[in-house]
Image 1: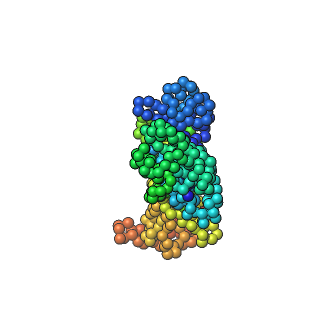
Image 2 (image 1 turned 180 degrees about the vertical axis):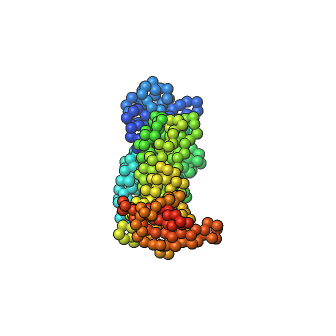
Image 3 (image 1 turned 120 degrees about the vertical axis):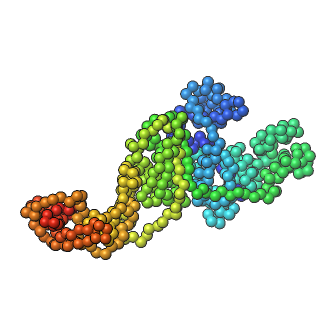
Amino acid sequence: MWLYCHFPQLLLDNRVRLQPDSNTLPLALYQLQGNQSVIVQCNTLAREAGVKPSIQTVMAISLCEQLQLVEYIPEREQQVLQQLATRLYQWAAKLVLYPPKGLAIELSSLAQLYGGMDAVFNTLSREVDALPIKAQLAVADNPLAAQLLAEYDCPVSLNRKESAQLLAQLPIGAAGLGTKTQKHCKAAGFRQLGELIQLSGDEVGRQLGLETQLYLERIQGRQQQSYNFFTPPESFRQSLDLVTEIPHWQGLLFPLKRLFGELEDFLYQRQKVTQQVSIELHHRYEPPSVVPVALAEPGWRGQSFLSLLQLKMESIPLPEAVIEITLVANELLQSEQHNSHFFGVQQHRHETLQLIGRLQAKLGNNAVFSPAMNDDPRPGNNEFRRPAGEKPQVLSPAPKRPLWLLQPPQLTSIDLWQLRHGPERKVCGWWDAGDIARDYWIARDKFQRVGWLYFESGQWYLHGWFS
């Protein structure tokens, strides 16, 4: 048994799902067919004004002056169909796409898993209803029969005999036959698909041709079929056409939030994470503006990417109004589970990496780094930069050092200080002509501030402050 899901206006419904405000006006998708522009999908407000699929765009505008027109792109609808299949893949592995508006799910292999055919259908239909996109469902012995029933919006029946009866009652015009074959059928007096099914194969072939004979055998499941089962994509890419041109970043926040929500669902369902995404802002005349957003560590929360993008907005002017947004995440990684961290260690690291990500978004990747030290004993020479967030190299225990070094050291008077700890003698650096000969002390001034002093060549210098 197969469940077929037919989405009669998939692209339009998906647009409304991502942009609810677009449904407050009459909206229709149009397509060029030959030398004519024809309506292919329209929302409820447009239908109430008299607009319907298959009428010409000029007539639609005359019926509804406020009609918002958007070009219908079949490839875009196929992308949406793949996204729906990816959502349903966690419930059923054997899916077959019938682009651009339908998909079929094999049910028999799921019956034992879910506890019966009724439970399988209820689970899948509930997930389809939650999309939310208008769907017409049907169940039959094979995908083609289920497709015909779903496209005609027949009642759903899990009983094989009842679904066969529903199939037989389909009018010839809903049987998926070619226009020429339909004319022949009507001329011969056939009105329902069941009348053709009752004929012998030789009789159908003689009257309507071999192609129609083979097609009817497929509907009845008499031909062995091979299926190209759906495999979820290894990357995320979703586009959103904007109803109106948006000239500023603030107006893009809501549609961007929707797209990042879609990315979050995609990553969560597949238990994947990603570290960098790209936002492509398409303009009418200018080349697309590409804005990369990177986290300090791989993640899956859409809000994390959106927060970093908001920090970058001020420094990225838009060359022109935006008409379309595309969100891309190509490098997906397996999500790692952290179950063995005690006392909030992992939580503290997560907060640190969030801060690093915000700083990088605001200041740039090259402006943020992690400090590290080597074994050079000279102050200032033993510090270098590591990539932000990288754990420091473990060194042997070192003497107490100030957090803030003065560059260059400041000349001072010993009368202003009380020496507390020292001296620590440093005579080194001969290996690279940067030799020093100093005695370092930890001292406190009259304001109780703790400084790091050294004596060299008869002078006292302040080299740093302790916190």
